[in-house]
Amino acid sequence: MKKLELAEVIKALREELYQAKQTGEGEAIRFNVNSVDIEFETAIEYVGSAEAGGKIKFFVFDVDAKASAEYKNATIHKIKLSMQPVDEENPNMETGEAGKVKVGGDGKQSPKTPANQLGGDG
Image (cartoon, rainbow, N blue to C red; front, side):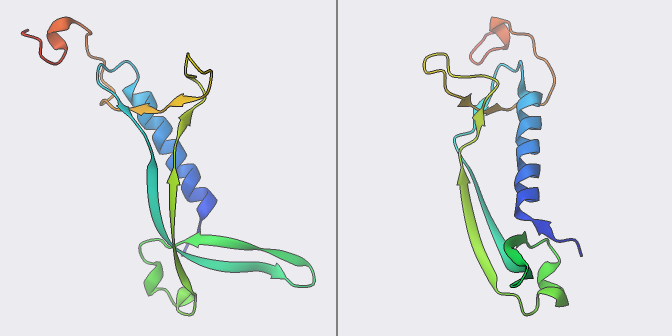
């Protein structure tokens, strides 16, 4: 069974958010991502030896991990991360700080005419 390191899971989330942002580019309706809340069940493992030094690693359980003998004696911890994604590529014009991430759309370009906007008569 593959161990899912917390850093790998967050990297995959970042990539998915970026893909959603790219897919929504040019769409008339987009969504601000105010926060991303994720809850994980994790196992904490000490990697290395006391003599050589080591570090603590967090591993996220995959779907089948609880049934695995590898984690039968592991202490399970729940962690919740609340993150506010920022868009470094599109800074806030007033403050110069990173802007809010906007996602949405299905990747299809829609004409930006008044008839296609909400409330338009056609």
